[in-house]
Amino acid sequence: MPRVAVQDSSRVSLRIRPEDKALLVRAVSYTHMDLTSFVLQNALQAAKAVIAEAELIALSEQDSLRVLDVLEDPPPPNARLLAAAHALPLMP
Image (tube, rainbow, N blue to C red; front, side):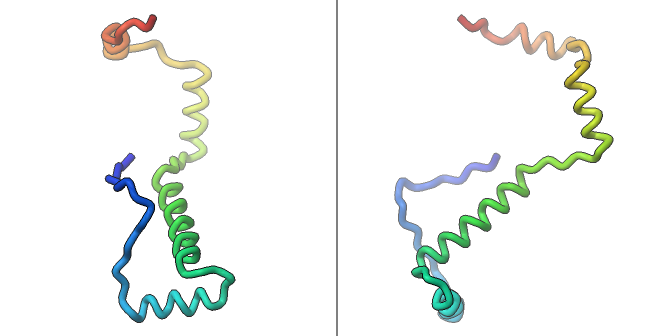
């Protein structure tokens, strides 16, 4: 998952072209919101959509059945998996 540095502040500043701001203000005039709420609500919806798309794993029906088969009847561990397990520290 990508990580982005976030400053410890709740303020966000944007540079915006006058015509873009005018468009936003015009859209806001049709809602019962202020500009900040309008921009934030729509930006959050867009952010959630981007995250959902990026983190979604789509499988074909054949792949889904294969995953279920492996979960129900897992293959025996191979040498690399056993070596990795033995390299882990023991938990108390």
